[in-house]
Length: 225
Image (cartoon, rainbow, N blue to C red):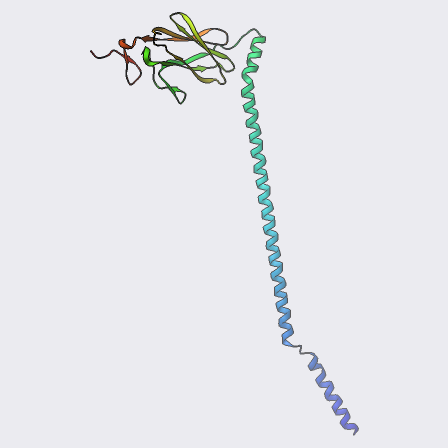
């Protein structure tokens, strides 16, 4: 009886360690899947962090571009204000030193039948009295800040004075006159600068309706017999 008991105990001891050394295969697979899921989550987090970083860089670049645009606008506004105030400052300094204003010059002057896009459509020296309206165009140079006058005269008598505020180094202005049917003769326009000097003048002859016809170019021609 004692011998049998010893053999059974030894058998249990022999098989015990083998049973403990072999864990179930299902548990190992679950652990591997969990590890893979964790690695996938970490990769997704890393990608999200990278995307956030790139987005922050893009925002910073956008803010920097906006800042540069605002600075450029501010510089442009400063230059515009300086250009607007420069003529007045120069005039004030000139008067303080007894220099007065710049005389300036008239680059172009012409009578015309119409003005389009700030330019005369033609140049006339003679018009029939029934044309009703005539324009006088001038292009002014180096007269910024001055008040320039178109002085209209008919047969030596002043009929009208039209004033313009010149706001740039090259400035185009024009005035017009409605012609009465009996306003024949010589019409003259004088360009007067801010110092009261006549710096240019031109004349147009208004003829009776039966004495001349207006051709398509705006110049006066004698009618065919």
